Length: 296
Image (cartoon, rainbow, N blue to C red; front, side, top):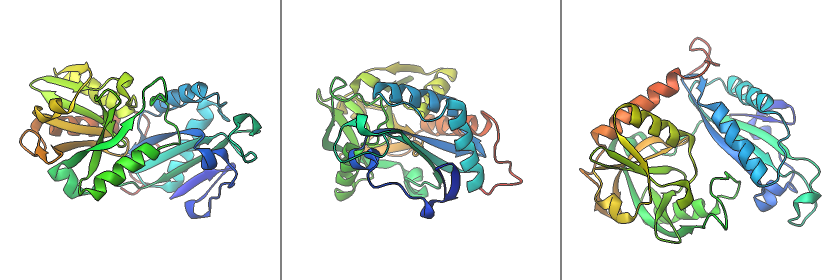
């Protein structure tokens, strides 16, 4: 693993952050999780655009221009040298005195980590995921807008912990109205016939980059793609359900709360979307780590 910090790239084990950084103390900051696929950084411009909006939403000035941030990501990915990797680009409020006041931080902090990620095993990908409905809820957008990819992931961590303690792979989170928001760190889709549905951002989900890519692909193969509120009943009655995310990729869901979904395995549409999503990521954008240089 490699990390860009303080203007240089080091082994991640050697990277250090000041313990009074408000990103560490209060979760005050934002980040992007980005995939490197076949030596290409997938949709980095869209990630950086979302980062800019998130920064504006929390009153945080980005310490570098989007072009400079892109260069940092690409440099760190090249240093890591793997054609398949995960990028974590982090902007913190910065170092400051104890106390939650953001105005006491003189300048934002910045670091970029590139390394491997394996949220789910090959076996889980083959069979599909078992999810439970978490007892933790996503907050209303007027309390905390989940479209801001902030450093505070406690709700997601607790939902994931609950799932693992109950013998499941992941958790489905509802909002205060009982509508499905998303999984712990992934967007969700249901398929009924040729209608592919995903919750709108107003129901408490992140507007995922890979979510948008899958919606684009699905429309190109003739599916009727809709953003609409979903309940647990929509999952129980679905032909197929799957998750999407930078870390998760596209992965089928086979059960919810012990009830089988569809045929209880990856369905044909999910398999096709998985393949097409991979093909898109392998061909879109510039190849920054050629096959002759990197390792898969």
